[in-house]
Each structure stands twice: as structure tokens, then as C-alpha cells.
Length: 112
View 1: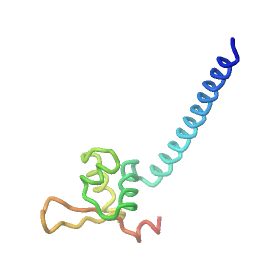
View 2 (view 1 turned 30 degrees about the vertical axis):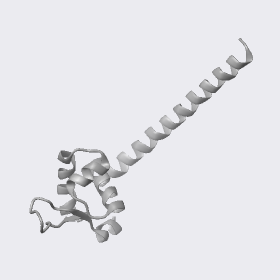
View 3 (view 1 turned 90 degrees about the vertical axis):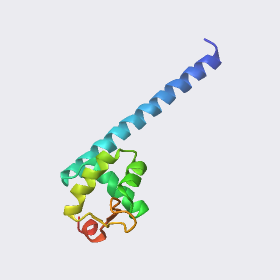
View 4 (view 1 turned 45 degrees about the horizontal axis):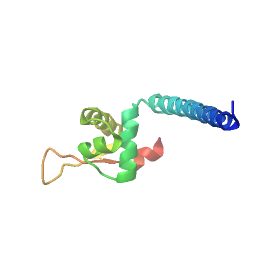
């Protein structure tokens, strides 16, 4: 095999090794996140809602769904779970009764 083919094959193998390292790291981080979130009685979708509200402030369910890449049908139950736990509160918009922006509550997050 010529030298250029050897170096190309070596680069491909190095790329595959890097991919495998990142894939293992992702699986490990995902497992850790899942364990931490579920140990608190929450679901990963709940965590995604809280993260969106942390970074963007009060949002409607439709906007939260768009930001986290999930359907509204997944976000509504999350907000329903988080509200009685004190993690979020809903405020009715004056313009339209159906839209209820959710906002995280700082006091509950600090005590967790």
C-alpha cells in the first residue's frame, strides 16, 4: 500500500476512535442525567421545560415545545407536574384565555 493510502486509513481509524469516545461520553452523560432527574421524581421532558424557562424566561407551552424540540402534548403534562411541585407557575394572558405562559419559580429551584 502506498504511504498516502496508509495515512488516509490511519486518519479514518483515528476519526472512528474519536467518534467512539464521544459516543461513550454521551451515553455516560445521558445515563447520569436520567438518573439525577428521575431520582427527584421528574422526567427528562420536565427537565427540558425547566431549562427552557431558565434560559428564556416565561414562555407559552407552544414556544417551550418549539425550543426543546418536543410536541406540545409532551410539554403540557410536564408543566402540569411541575406546577404543583412549585417549580413553575402559570399566568393567564389577558389577550387570550387559552394561552398560559409558564415561568419557573426561583425559590423552589434553590431549595432542591
